[in-house]
Image 1 (cartoon, rainbow, N blue to C red):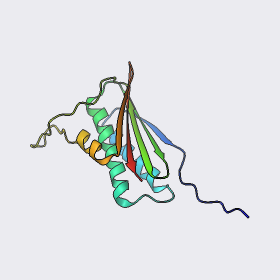
Image 2: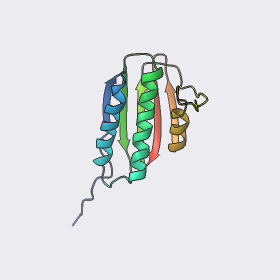
Image 3: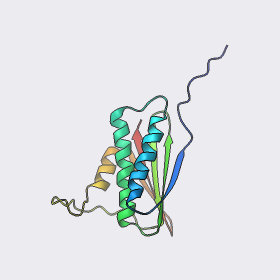
Length: 136
């Protein structure tokens, strides 16, 4: 007799957003729902990190990228969650000195790099995708 195990992953979740400030909240909602539906469950600390990375990457698109749309793709594997955010701007992300007065930011990109196990940037002539792999 064979016993079936609960799936370790879900199909990838994808969403496309207009590049507007409310896209950040929508992306967080999509991420929370995706993470909440995973089995086995993701720990609270890791779930918060995943949501924060999505929020920062989508915020960077809204604030800095050209184009009118961005997309989010979430994928779960046994030990890692992959977050991919794409936009229609071929320029790579630029690290800036953090603004300690709190007016212009500069903390998001270093935070993404710190929270993720691996961050990759894929560029082509008309777009970019940033992938971050985070612990499940």
